[in-house]
Length: 116
Image 1 (cartoon, one colour):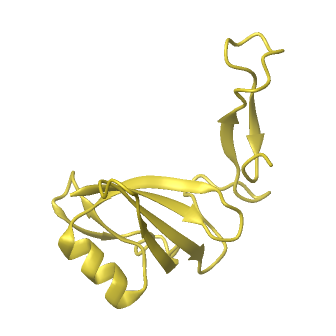
Image 2 (cartoon, rainbow, N blue to C red; image 1 turned 90 degrees about the horizontal axis):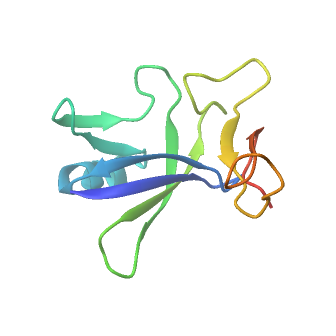
C-alpha cells in the first residue's frame, strides 16, 4: 500500500492524499477514475462515487524512490470538496515565505488555487 497525492491537472491544487494498493491501482487504470483503498472500511473507494464529484484520471506518476504515487486528475463536474461553498472550491494554505503575519510561519488565507 502506498500513499497517493491527488492533484488537479488544471489548477495544480493538491486535492487530497489517500492510499492505493495493487487492486485500487489496477481499477483506477482500468476505469480511468480516481480509485483508492479505504483503510477505515477495508474496501475499494472511488472518490466521489456517492457525492457525484468524481475525477477523470489523466496520469499516474511514481516518485523516484517508488514509495508514493501522484494521481493527476480532472474533476468531471467541476466540484472537488464536500465543503464547497457557493463561490466555488477554496482551500486554506499557509505561506511560508511571508513572515510578516503574527503566526510563526506566515498568514493563513483562503485561496482558490495554489499560490503562483
